[in-house]
Length: 465
Image (tube, rainbow, N blue to C red):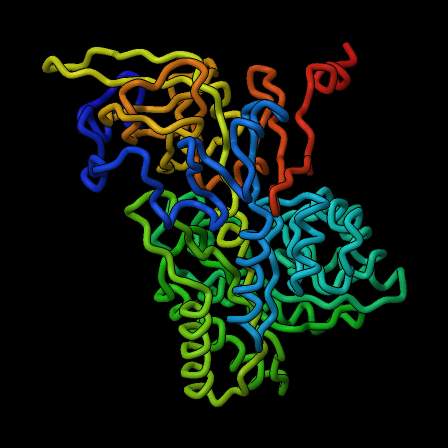
């Protein structure tokens, strides 16, 4: 790959786009795997979600706007609950968490995984049952652990020897016994971006099984009267499409569990294999449905337990993206359209919208691919390969690297980007002092605000200079 002055992200696809992207026969068609169940084109050609036109949403709530199909979110939560009927499903709140979504998760019978004091605060504000909350994090502060203990959080996933000692002292001081899982590193290289692969040895999370560190962590927990060891935890990464990596992880974690049985005469009752189940961001992605994932994991665990002579522990999984991601799209308004000449007489069309890397950092951070469509109307114009970019002062401010849009897209049109329910609002920033967008939930023909748009007054309120 030859160097590009703006970075490899720009040069990677070239003006023809990536090899998997095909010019559509109908530029108005919606690829079904990318959109929530409630999204369709109305008779006027504009997009509708839950019976509400996106033009009406933009007029009432402004753009950029995260639009959540509530029924779709709930349906995906129920699908995981049904598929993993004999397991515990913890919704990974880091994907997207608000008071409203925490209540949806509770109502659909899922547990909740949080990984910071702020996420725990949202869960408690929502009235989420504390005993159904799990607390993650590689560097939990004493204040965060104290709040979790005082709230009665159901389980804490310990991540370091310092944390084991810290938590034990805090629990003992309160006269309580904290239930914990030991997070392990299983040495699995998940087929995903290096920043979201979390089970290889050279990273910050957990205790290494290979080095014997995880076994020592188990001993450290068992020595503490104020801690109750529930089981072991593993998380191999994010945006994973098959169960092959989970097979290796389960084998190594259950091998440790067998060693714990042999050394301590203790069969641990629980096993958490984490989440990371992938979704479709573009037509090249082919995620597995929850029932297929559940059947695959159950078979793996049963096989490995039989090999070690272990009773099958109660499984936990932590889907976040797979529930929140496809349920939401981001709605933008087009501001400018320009064509930039490239080598060989070609050109690239840039469609600039009123958001960008402040509301979706994943393209810049992970080189993530997204799709999009003209949302405010249908078009009879021929498709043109386009790059959707934001309004920020960065050449890497790209929302959609390559997608076919109608050739007549102009300022004032609305563009919708699907699959933005996970890690977009939760990773949003105020870069260039851009207020973060609102989040709207749509259901049965009604839209309601669940997170309001930030204002300039919000930004200035923090500036005490």
